[in-house]
Length: 126
Length: 143
Image 1 (spheres, each protein chain N blue to C red):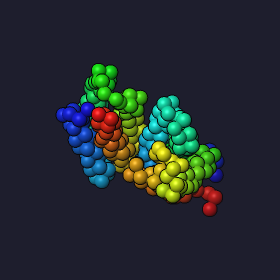
Image 2 (image 1 turned 90 degrees about the vertical axis):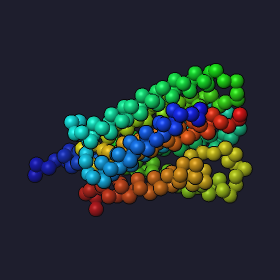
Image 3 (image 1 turned 30 degrees about the vertical axis):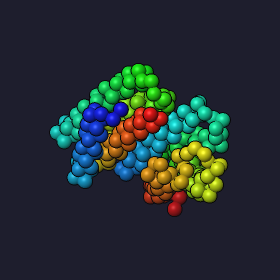
Image 4 (image 1 turned 120 degrees about the vertical axis):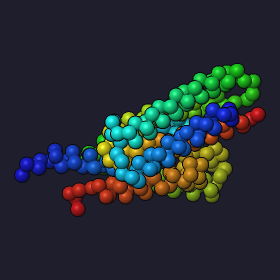
């Protein structure tokens, strides 16, 4: 699984996390029409799209591979990676203070961890 | 005297899930998700290998779910349930953490709480402490 896509997604997630951290520190609550909010939400939409591609590719490779693989766990991480960001955005948008971006920060930081675990599961039992 | 008991209850609920509390609940939700998925896979695929560890995994998952939901609801009863579940969580991570180091034979496969949550960047150890501090900070009245 270690390839350009998962590396890119990791960096985009970290970038979005950094942005969310800046919003938190600068005390810029999420507001639907504010440019800084739209930017981070757009970035997250892009990230989610990339994660969706990764999940589809992941399943294709999982069923195509001959190697020994803990398929249930691997599939679980693939699906799990899609759930985190929408939930984080939903939970963040209801908060009208600097802690809204804080929730996005937490969600974004979870993504690289999930990708790391995915790659670990893929590369064990080679 | 327009401040009815309902208003105060709403205030408490809002306060529990607002501000930093919102981040706390988000982290709890991630752990609820992670622990649930992990224990479901463990129990479904290889329960006989380490029944105790996997049952504890499932127990941890339930505790995280209860804590997440109750913190998010934040009314008086929920806060009480949240407090109890977070205390259970703290006792759990300390007990399992110690046992997994002292008697690693009993825990051949890792749970969320093994090695004080080592596999999860020790967040499981810090989370209950922050949870209890937050519940304390947001309480009203009873003092």
